Image (cartoon, rainbow, N blue to C red; front, side, top):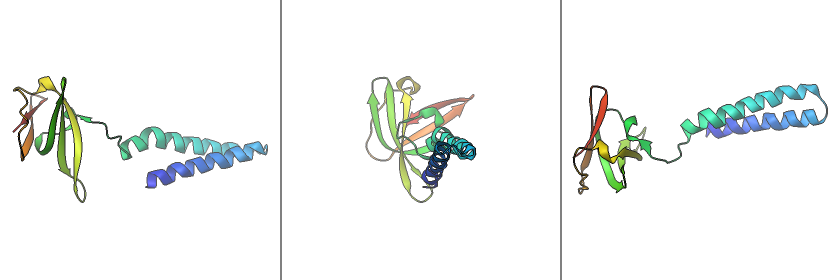
Length: 130
């Protein structure tokens, strides 16, 4: 929520600066520069981190460990895995995508209590569905 507030603050600086420049006041350059800086910073660096798009993350982003699997979906050469992980206060669902060739065996979509284990050896991460 603070991200939206800061972005709107940057837009307010832009509006005030443009209005001042419209009245031929040279001081209007300062709010325009500050507003542009805030809006560009928020739009291209802060917002993408704070507000995820919902697109699947690369499987290589997962650190080694054992994860609870909600679902597995095989689509072409990709394996989409929904992983349930604890967030600050509750359990959330995160979507990860792996290339099909990353798994040794054929992908078996089992029933409940599936686990995804990420094993790291020699700097290479290997996903294993159990």
